[in-house]
Length: 140
Length: 158
Image 1 (cartoon, rainbow over the protein chains, first blue to last red):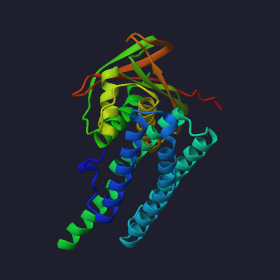
Image 2 (cartoon, rainbow over the protein chains, first blue to last red):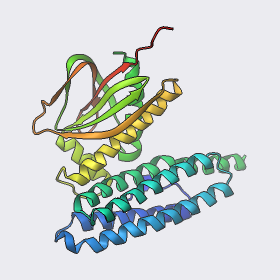
Image 3 (cartoon, chains in turn brown, cyan):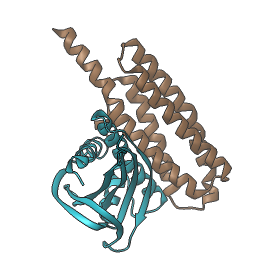
């Protein structure tokens, strides 16, 4: 799932993004793979729980970094993170309420993959651009 | 039906497809159609409310739709299942969300409602609609269409 074009050029953030992409890839392999759904539920629970905690950690690290570099759109980006977290929590609840229903898990996987790609390929690229612009200015 | 309503949706499609799918798009021919919305095998329909009301429908062949999901997932996806349609709906949602922000910048205030995915076995799906713009979008995979059926909210004279 990870593509080099998603790299923003900040090691800490890129490493965490790769971890997120890897976890979603593993999740997709599980839910799209062979086998009975009942046998996959533990991995679905694990992914849902991982996403909820790791997304919080990653967003928090990213926001600390943004403040450190005086990123101008800290507040707007924080808002996007809050919305992302709320969507992940909403699906985590839906999964529990549905007894880890396969259709809900498939729907969640489709959305999670798309949200993450968009966030990294669009919104987070702006952080990389800002850093590179600063480096250019410093060189002058 | 004004052509200017089409530009924010085309620009947003161009931006999002480039960023998310690494896919360049180009505007093809635009035709004004009446009474129907011509669709395809996979149709992502987004409702628009506010100063403009109506629907915007992104219609793809099954092949193109699967190629888009494959590109995102980085794995073979051969079925338009809930996972694939959920991802496609979200792409439509993101494109339209961006388009609405472009409209907002032009002082036109609108919002979108969650997407509906309509799958059709053949390519002749149609929905009744008074007037819309059918725009062909060219890509290296295959062409797809965006059907823009929006009208301005009537203003009540003071």
